[in-house]
Length: 310
Ligand code: HEC
Ligand code: HEC
Ligand code: HEC
Ligand code: HEC
Ligand code: HEC
Ligand code: HEC
Ligand code: HEC
Ligand code: HEC
Ligand code: HEC
Ligand code: HEC
Image 1: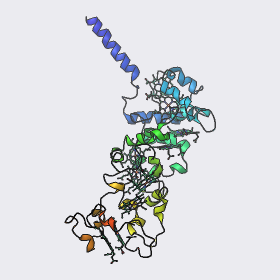
Image 2: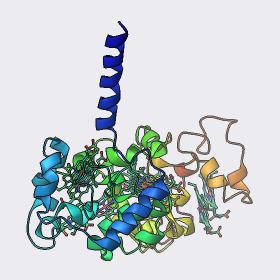
Image 3: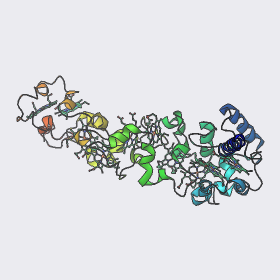
Image 4: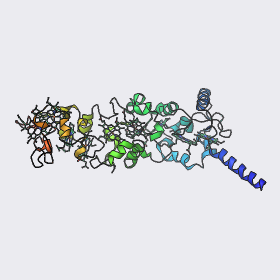
């Protein structure tokens, strides 16, 4: 009895020892100190990927790197250079049973976020990622590998069918809004987060691809750009004064419905403060409210359209 229990315990403990990365229990600072020393010593393996694959070729995820761009041995690709070690750092003594840390990636990695990202940026520092260092994603310690899968034939975040899901896994507020009754076709995947945002950051507050919110909207709603003979100032100023790009419970992606929408700014106006609940069939109270009369809300080109009513 006792003997069998002992054998069972032994099996449990050895299987744990094999599956957990040996350095995963180490203090992260200690791991980083080891990695830094390894990079300084620069002991790369002589056989490149072949030496790694001696131990890692049974892992299908590892092997999938050869189905993607990073597994092709051409140009500046890792496989044309240091191979696996171009990303995971020099092998050093790791081949002695895998106990010495390698630079690892992802949410549960031992390596620091800065170390992981600097490996990728070593080859991808270009115009697209010009604003990466100041970006919210970088500040919030989102790693390149939080969005990108390199050990894969196709990276899901680069596939239009799956990109939004990658983003919405973290962005639950936008996910909720994309289901609301008025929304851009985000849920169906016809519109991508990257149609409006640069996930690597931009010069704009909300990492928009264009300089202003309005320029982002004009890409698809060019007719709203004008110029109009009679402009409506908040429209010129920022479409997001009235619309929520991700979705809304109100029609037309409106943040608030008329008359309240209008009264936020037109409070001092006499006729805009008329009671709107007394008589359901007047032009003031029927469905469109202020819009029953002011129907050219984005601007008017009619000679007498200064009140945006024609
Ligand atoms: C002698 C066998 C051996 C060799 C050779 C070897 N490794 Fe490992 N490697 C291991 C073991 C054992 C682990 C421990 C964790 C595990 O995968 O179960 C490991 C873990 C790793 C991890 C972390 C895995 C994780 O789950 O996060 C990476 C990354 C890695 N190795 C990369 C490499 C690279 C790159 C090379 C070639 C330069 C290499 N290894 C060569 C045995 C080896
Ligand atoms: C372009 C950079 C890059 C190259 C080249 C690369 N890897 Fe990775 N590797 C990663 C990233 C990023 C991850 C995190 C997992 C992911 O892609 O989602 C990873 C994960 C791993 C893991 C952990 C896998 C697991 O089961 O979780 C191992 C082991 C590994 N790589 C070994 C290798 C070996 C061996 C090679 C060479 C054949 C290699 N890597 C080439 C970037 C790279
Ligand atoms: C040794 C250089 C090198 C390193 C390191 C490297 N890459 Fe790449 N990467 C390339 C090359 C070369 C290409 C293909 C040509 C191109 O698009 O620039 C590429 C392409 C890509 C692409 C586009 C893939 C596609 O299917 O079109 C993504 C995304 C990417 N890399 C992400 C990463 C991430 C994330 C890391 C870090 C884990 C990384 N890269 C590390 C060289 C590198
Ligand atoms: C928040 C998710 C996210 C993060 C974090 C992220 N990317 Fe991307 N990346 C994307 C998306 C989405 C695309 C495709 C759309 C685009 O080009 O803007 C992309 C495209 C790419 C491409 C191919 C097209 C191009 O822009 O050249 C490369 C290379 C790339 N990313 C590298 C990186 C590197 C390196 C990092 C880390 C410094 C990183 N990415 C961080 C989401 C992300
Ligand atoms: C691993 C989690 C994660 C993933 C995946 C992710 N994000 Fe984020 N993102 C964050 C965090 C954390 C913040 C900062 C807090 C916030 O605004 O929610 C952020 C902020 C943002 C912001 C606001 C930027 C700013 O400067 O204010 C935008 C836009 C954004 N993400 C877009 C995207 C897009 C597009 C994708 C997919 C390509 C994506 N995110 C994927 C975690 C993530
Ligand atoms: C039609 C363009 C458009 C699309 C598509 C889009 N966004 Fe946005 N997003 C915006 C605008 C505009 C803002 C800035 C709103 C503002 O300034 O009030 C923004 C802001 C954000 C913010 C910052 C929110 C905050 O409160 O600071 C996050 C996070 C975000 N978007 C994530 C996403 C994600 C994730 C997707 C894909 C599911 C996505 N967006 C798709 C236009 C868009
Ligand atoms: C990539 C193209 C694209 C961009 C960029 C874009 N839109 Fe749209 N927009 C669409 C499409 C397509 C529809 C029609 C959706 C439908 O009928 O399902 C739409 C519909 C709308 C609607 C009507 C929604 C409804 O419920 O009927 C409003 C309002 C709107 N967009 C405002 C904006 C604003 C504000 C911006 C900038 C923040 C913007 N759009 C950026 C493509 C875009
Ligand atoms: C002062 C508030 C306000 C601002 C600012 C505003 N809109 Fe609107 N928008 C509305 C209202 C109200 C409706 C619904 C009534 C209608 O159809 O005119 C609407 C409807 C829309 C529609 C769907 C119906 C149509 O006309 O195609 C689109 C698209 C749209 N807006 C785009 C934009 C864009 C792009 C901007 C920025 C250039 C913008 N809006 C700025 C109030 C505003
Ligand atoms: C974000 C603030 C804001 C919102 C919301 C807003 N407006 Fe305006 N509106 C202005 C400003 C600023 C002007 C410029 C004239 C002024 O100083 O009053 C203006 C001008 C107008 C004018 C022309 C006034 C003139 O001088 O002839 C009309 C009509 C008007 N708005 C109606 C509306 C209606 C109807 C709504 C709701 C659908 C609305 N506005 C929503 C800020 C706003
Ligand atoms: C029954 C039609 C009608 C309705 C409903 C209506 N308006 Fe007007 N509004 C007008 C007309 C007509 C004018 C032009 C009056 C003039 O030229 O003296 C005007 C002028 C304005 C002006 C600019 C002149 C001024 O008085 O400052 C604003 C701002 C305005 N309306 C806002 C609103 C708001 C906000 C609502 C909804 C709460 C609303 N209106 C509802 C017909 C209407």
